Amino acid sequence: MIMRSHHRGRRAVVPSLLAALTLLVAGCTSGGGSDEEAAPTTSSAPAEPTAEPVEWTPSNDLIQPLVAGRPGSERGLSFDRAQVEVPITYDEPEGERLPMTVVRAVFPGQTDKIGSLVVNPGGPGASGVDAAIGLALTLPEDVLRRFDIVGFDPRGVSLSSPVECIPDETKDRLVASEPQPTSAEQLDEVFALADEVAQDCADRYESPEALGAFNTVDTARDMDLLREALGEEQLTYLGYSYGTTLGSTYAELFPDRVRAFVLDAAVDPDADAQADAEAQAAGLEASFDAFAQNCLALIAGCPVGPDPRRFTDELMLQAALGPIPSSAEGETRQATPGVVLTAITAALYDTDTWPQLSQALAAARNGDSAGLFSLADSYVGRLEDGTYSNQLDANVAINCADTDQEIDTDEVRRLAAEWDARYPLFGAGTAASLYTCTPWEAERTPLPERDAEGSAPILVVGNSGDPVTPLPGAVDMAEQLTSGVLLTWQGQGHTAYPKNQCINDAVNRYLIDLVVPLDGLTCPA
Image (cartoon, rainbow, N blue to C red):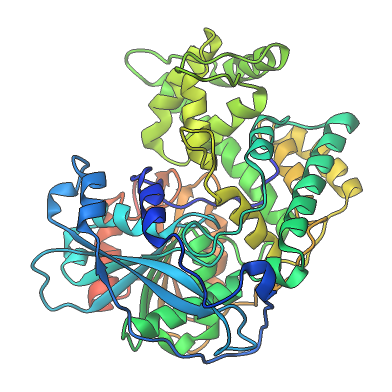
């Protein structure tokens, strides 16, 4: 897939929620003009627009039926929704605005309430609305008793003026495309598909300023308007994966407004696109090996046999020679090697999905790819009716707006050959993804260097077995942030909180009482 740094955060737990919420916010506008008409621009200059207090609309009738029966639904949570208007461009902070969709989850019987815990699940492109609901079902009750859980869809994402410029048919081709391109012909196809995506998005938005409006710096400013609208003097924030990039950017812009920030599964702030991509390839390879070892230790036996890596290589070849059909009713797609590797990537994010992955791989070897498509579709936001969320569109648009680095085809060809030898499953495809932003025609707003000097202590959480944001990224972020404090979990999967009691205890004390753990504290698996 041609996707750069797709750092997802926590897995969505309410898959039908966003479609339902869309019906409630449909027709909302920014006060005049579409994204093409407004031709928004971005700026790195400080801006201090104003925000009206949030006006919440009760939404239990919508959300309660969707979470009914799920773990945590017995907590008696209540839900509200709202929209906060943010400037299209911070060059004109009181000019035209766009609506940012927000959801609040409230635990019954709160005592000594501190305020709101604002969350972002990563991506970029993942829904903070969905994350707030999912986290309200799973976060420790000690936190829920003291905080409302507030999630927002960042500009360009899902319910907040979503960037939509990649056709569904193209997304199907992206998923199905060659995942290990090494030959000149395969790489030419990768470059052509990336060029096509860039051209479609340029045509859709007509001006580089319009497409460049979807960037992290302006989203961080939006987040400060949300803080003001919530009536909070300082922000309490929980960000996963790309959400650590957003959180550290906010802390750089507004260090005096940081109350407590937890940055879990940190994206390395020091790494350029190439270093970040190579770290991700290495992390995925290591996580696949951990999955294989776990599978081989099963008492009932590993469904993919005594050599999971060899099994996977043979399955990829099988899919290349003849795509594998699915037994799912009405499914006409057949699994290519791209689908196989996308499913594997999806499952490596969370150890809870490893059994599902081993069963899906075994079933595919026997001629049924339904399990692979289930994993792959959840990863890329493909819905049951064959349409997609805008997760891929937003991921590419935001990643490309955040960098001015461009890597040419010759360098990609060189890296694909090198990384294919070094990282056999994920190397070549990860190298190829580096071309994604090269043809991108949009205004760029590169991320600032981030030390957040003057902020309160910021807790950075890393996981020694993280497949996509390896531990060195958390180490670098904690070192780069002047007030950064590192907390490490020796576990597997993407993100750490709230998966481990030691991590939970340290994070809870920090969020609630501002008790900062000892820098470098390590929690065992």
